[in-house]
Amino acid sequence: MIEIITTVETFEQAKELLEAGTDTLYFGEELFGLRLPASFTREEQRQLVELAHTYGKKVNIAMNGIIHPEKMKKVPEYLQFLKEIGVDQLTVGDTGIIYTMKKHPEWRIPYIFDAETLVTSARQINFWAKRGAVGAVLAREVPFEEMKAMEEKLNVPVEILVYGATCIHQSKRPLLQNYYHFTKQEERVDRDRGLFISEPKKDDTHYSIYEDTHGTHIFASNDINLSKELGLLYQHQFRTWKLDGLFTPGENFVKITKAFVEAKEQILAGTWNEESAEILSKKISELHPQNRELDTGFFYIDPEAIK
Image (cartoon, rainbow, N blue to C red; front, side, top):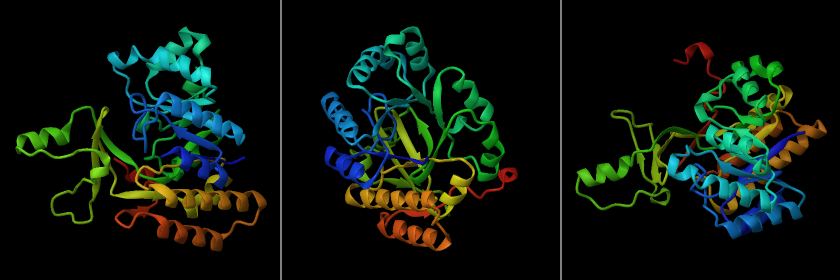
């Protein structure tokens, strides 16, 4: 089985994504979830869950933020709400949430462990599987050679980012606001502003940056496109694929999702080949935002070269 997980921007887009063939909708609210294309109200979340279930699909709620004490007080009420509306899974980053569910089994929801860059080994993933995790989000920095080495050791599925932006730094500090205050400027710092930073004397660096209630987020210059690598991922049992539409809004993200769904169907039918991969890759490039580049991230990097 191949599972395609997609972020959600609006209720209308969610319906289009479900009709395009996505298996799992991934969304939530900014209070608990990191780097979401939109933050949904409780009523909107309820409606999205009902919509997904109408199509026979699943919902995964983002609770992958670092939950500081003032937010942790609000976790029990949110877990009760998610349990009530029938959410299928959570993506959890803070072990305090896991502890809360263990302490209160009546609020427990199957969870996927996501500690960002820390999830790099089968041993760590299996550690959390023994403590209730039904899956894990593999760090974007793990090369394919290391993925193959952990393949036979994994006890639960791991999610792989096959399309979308990669966050390379997060700080709770409001770095942009601090800069603007220091320079006596009044400027917006939200994602829609489209800000980026570059390294001195490196014209090819273009790190998107924005702030929200979780702090400051900085992204890699290039977004991920593993369309040509889908066959390899499938062959080595990495069959949970995430598509992130954070910087790819609207209809184009739906079209990209549909293209990946078509690739999934070809792979399962045994008709996937190099020509199919080339066609998909070209289509993704055409639909991807013009001001953002694509590459394969760490996929082909020699593990020995990573410092």
